[in-house]
Image (cartoon, rainbow, N blue to C red; front, side, top):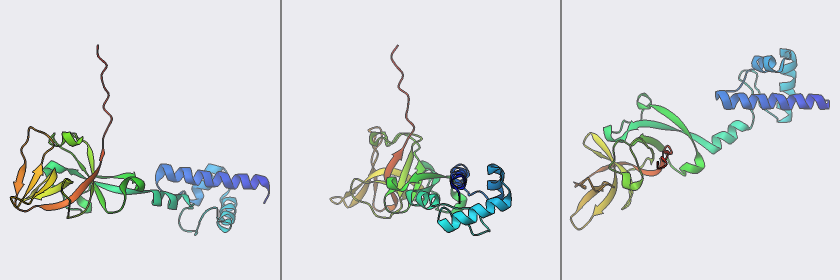
Length: 207
């Protein structure tokens, strides 16, 4: 193909990737034709050539697709927001998911994760404030000093876990001196906090 056709192919690829980033889906042949102001036959011919050249993928039924999709999938994932931790932890089911948040995989590490919204001030000493989103790794074990989601009867709480082997009990420690430790014989651990996502609060300048 001529140089101008190469430029058009690059424009088609750029439009497809921009469309995907904005809409989370790939454009159809008709949408490419309309945006590029070329006929559908011409658009199909270009897309077929680009498919053969490895510039994009197109199977004739779904929208075009470039390597950008695979890069995004490897670089990020969707994490479910399950609600307030102090109101009880919902079961991990579709009907209990409030929303999803896309987070970079580099931030997460290995494992399965969900997000809970902190409610209250019992963990302010660990820099977890009311309204913060806490990233939880799903697991049923924890080490001494981990901040865990612990289920007590029907209520979940976010506290620092300590194994008191001398008294053969478990201490759920709030990171706020206004509150006392919760002493338990047994506890069901539903996850360990690994990150805190918070809004930056503006500091008011002195008058």
